[in-house]
Amino acid sequence: MKISTDIVVAGTGPAGLMAALALAGEGFRIVLVGPETNLTDRRTTALMEPQLDFLDRLSILGSLEAGSAPLRIMRIADATSRLFRSPVVTFRASEIGEARFGLNIPNGHLLAELDAAVKGNSNIERVTSLVARWAPQADVVEAALDNGDMIAAMLTVAADGRLSPAREAAGIQVRSRPSRQSAVVLSFSHSRSHEDTSTEFHTETGPFTQVPLQGKRSSLVWVTRPDEAETLMTLDDDTLSRRIEERMQSMLGRVTVEAGHQLYPLASALPHRFAANRVALVGEAAHIFPPIGAQGLNLGIRDIESLAAIAARHGADPGSVKALDAYDRARRPDIVARSSAVQLLNRSLLSDMLPVQVMRSAGLGLLGAASPLRALFMREGLRTGSGLGNLFRG
Ligand SMILES: Cc1cc2nc3c(=O)[nH]c(=O)nc-3n(C[C@H](O)[C@H](O)[C@H](O)COP(=O)(O)OP(=O)(O)OC[C@H]3O[C@@H](n4cnc5c(N)ncnc54)[C@H](O)[C@@H]3O)c2cc1C
Image (tube, rainbow, N blue to C red; front, side):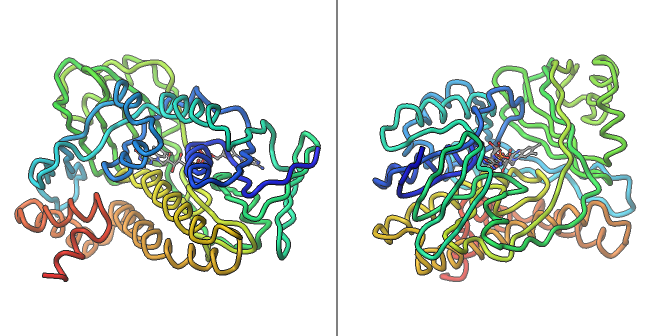
């Protein structure tokens, strides 16, 4: 079958589903191509308040709140055994007049709500298949699907993940860094209340991050060397529970891990451009870095908001050179800054160099001691430009 549409969105992860909804909301006809939505993903995603506003505009925030946990306090604890260690730094949403930083949402819940919204949207045609071949041309982009369908559109949104075949077809080069880390992801219950607090323990092999879930439960992302991650995956539940409790110095009391641990090999990569040849990159197609400080999908949502606004301004041809140049310019500062900050923090943990350790612990120490600096950091973390931008505006 031959389908002609305004925009084809490739990928049915969170970025693809959200991009389809946001662009359909601007009045475009969308074909969304990808496999059945994966409702078995047991990870959770911490989304910050401005990105929750976006989900509210998609009319799904209300149903998401019911199964999610608020993040009111975020702590960084230096759990390295190095000579220079910083004190615990605590960020409280109330310090900057916010009720919460955001919500920790189970991915299965998020994807189910997005999937239902897509199915109920008459501007979106959902095709369950993979794109086998892309042919970007001067005034149209063609996608040949595995199921034999052929789609022609003015713009392709590449939400097809870290390997992004659409990005490759557009000739966009990627600068990749080899990764020496994997993440073990699981949920656990605990005997003490987490009091809406997330704690990121910084260790020599990467961050170990507990994020609150509803009730006395939390999710855990344990970033470490690939060989240690493999070993953790082989431990029985009692041993793994004890290891987690020890690592957290029993701050949540007795820990009991739940079934369904997942292992994610980590990667880092940054494309040279964020759009070209009628293809715009969003989500992990546009930026890949380790899960530190809950950045990935928050950044992905900002990609989508920006793309939807620019596409609406170039309604006659959202895939034109002008539109794609505007998107590339708009996203570059945010993506480069966030990717660099995450890489820097991660590398400072892994580095054995004394000056690097001194700088990291001094930086965290300063944040812990100086309340105005902490407030600035929190505002900037929530809304790009709102902390530093206000400072420079005086
Ligand atoms: C352990 C872990 C914890 C994280 N925690 C957080 C967090 O707390 N907060 C946060 O903001 N971010 C977090 N992230 C990052 C976040 O998970 C990612 O940014 C997000 O999942 C990326 O979504 P995506 O839709 O871009 O990619 P994906 O979810 O990878 O989806 C890509 C989609 O493209 C499809 N696809 C591939 N090839 C084709 C093709 N040829 N044709 C059609 N479809 C195709 C795939 O099947 C898939 O459906 C975390 C990441 C990890 C690994």
